[in-house]
Length: 250
Image (cartoon, rainbow, N blue to C red; front, side):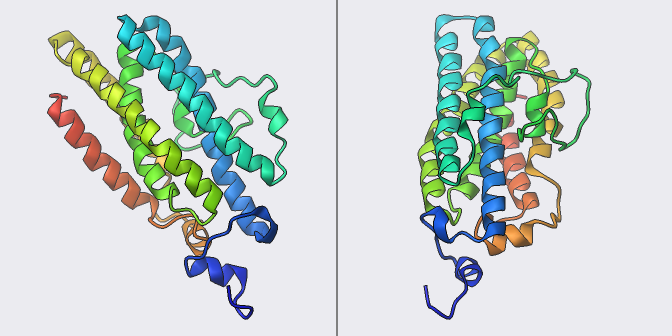
């Protein structure tokens, strides 16, 4: 980095940071927000999906569900360790927190954050049975794939590296969900139940991308923490989801 170039200019030009020391205060704040959202969403998603293990119709499905729960918790720990290097009180995550807490099924909170953590709003809604859980896993799994493709390019190199490690595992979670959904969609009753679940979860997962024309996007882009706007990521997810559901007759 040139001595005449500020850190902000360096980041805006595509530069990378490798340690907390030179991170400007606003950059640190936005980076911590990004990490906290990911960690809290993984912990809440893992806790909410854990009960679904007992609803699985077979041993293979139980193993897949257990794997998803385990790996999502591991992903949270990996990013939490990076938060700790910035001075975050990581011990609070070891204390009791109601990660499995959910709102009423018919609640509608948009993209709001509730309950004292930074989980995405979609993780405030309860799962109802195996078909519902598998369907949500597919829709959110495809969304996570799109989001991680974006986050794997963040300007904080250790976090980008962590996301690049996490991405293929999350992609496998979505693949396991699609395998399960294909079995469900093989019957007429299963297709009807899955379609109802898609109708419920689609707008809630869509809200996780944030609103169009985000006022914060320009700041995040300048810091190298975002590269494509919310609406572009949402469009990619919608197209990929339509393709996946079309193949299953849903």
